Image (cartoon, rainbow over all chains, first blue to last red; front, side, top):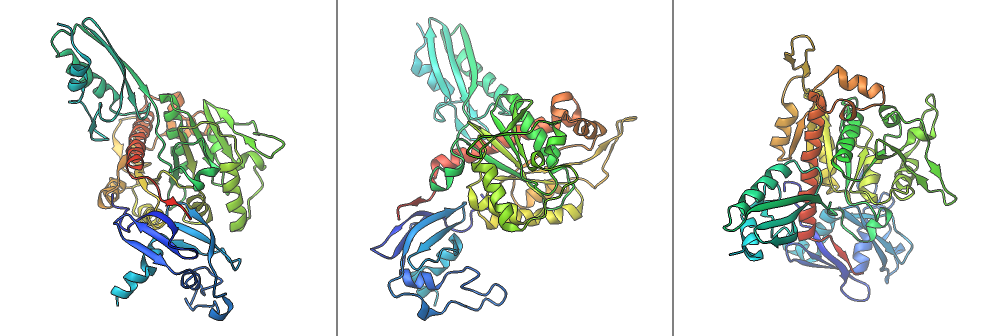
Length: 108
Length: 361
């Protein structure tokens, strides 16, 4: 089908106590350190909608921040409920794939 | 020598469902096979009662079995069991009893989305399916008028609504809750709440198909819908004119962005058949929606003619699929509904093969 260009996640679970693991349709496994993922929150209060500038102050996020709950959004994204109370970020599957730490490294 | 079950099944393996592209046996369509002497009886359980090729398949199956030596008669019952294409799981908690959710969208307004929604829904009802219709066009709800509904839904003590039933179709609309001269002037959060209420707060019961008539555009209602539930797929309605097609492509782009499948494109007001000479006049141009469907590799579900009869039937609250199903427009709607049902079945099959994302967090 023409509308399935981006790989889809097959399973979203824990890599360890705090970190997130996604297994993708193409077999790739991504592990996201919790705090790094929190700092990459794409919501309008963390990133300026017009300029794209990051508004979230790194120091304000606790070192041990971690997801408490994950909700699937429709067919295209997830919402993470964080231990610091934040929950407005919608992480789309393409964004998560782009944020995959090991792929980011190979991409330069 | 009497024919065996294996021989009959082997013969039926040669009959394929042209939409699902597999044979009737491996699809699990053959039920209640009984052989009494030379008499063979079985049921073919399709994935939709609105299957456009049911008669062809029935005849193919009959011919395949009748060919076997020792068979003197073949008795085939056609049944259907609509499959679930909406993935189960946490996101599905709002609408656990609905198998398929199909929003009808356009980019531009005034292309006949509501008329198409009503007639598609009623064509599916007439085929024997259990169907609901949600009028999500909160700004200009026209579904009650098109269906001639004057009743209002009952609301129970838990604030849950019972949909109004008309022509066997279960209907919910913003129009039930406002006076004709009132207007909805809302920001996004209110629209989101309403969509949520129309899904989870309505006692829909068991439905094979829920058709959702969207407002035009790519705004809050569309976004809320795609966030709240995993939809089966959207249908895009457009007139053949460039100005409508350009905006229709934006609606397609929005659904793609939200990873929501597109089940197909319908060209409405495709041509005007002159009531005096019968000559078709392509008022808005011709074949534009079909060309776009082809270019974007989307199924084309059909062309609906522009006809006075459609307009009159709609204004009377007696849709053409009910009053004149044999008219050209009536036939076109029924054919489009059958093609839509086939696309839903194909999606349902894919959903069974590739299950939705599993969250184990």
